[in-house]
Length: 102
Image 1 (spheres, helix red, strand yellow):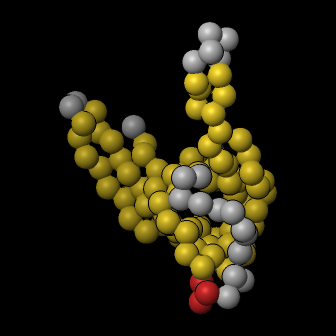
Image 2 (image 1 turned 60 degrees about the horizontal axis):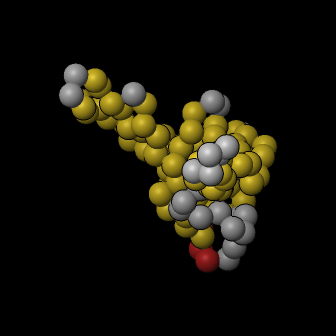
């Protein structure tokens, strides 16, 4: 596995005025993985081009990785859309993710 990724989980905190603030914390860092670019495309939102990239990360099985988490790889943040247990043996997993680039 050639790449290193960080898996982050969503946590909720409160700011000084007591309002909820969404924050992300590192759950697993420097995890070995392979990244495969699947698809990319752009659409216009008003006058701005918005590009979406779909990728797949392959890595060893890690308990607790869920679709509401995200992956940070090489400075880019990818939202996890699906986690698949390869061959249902909990040895490897495939993580489907996407990123939006404005």
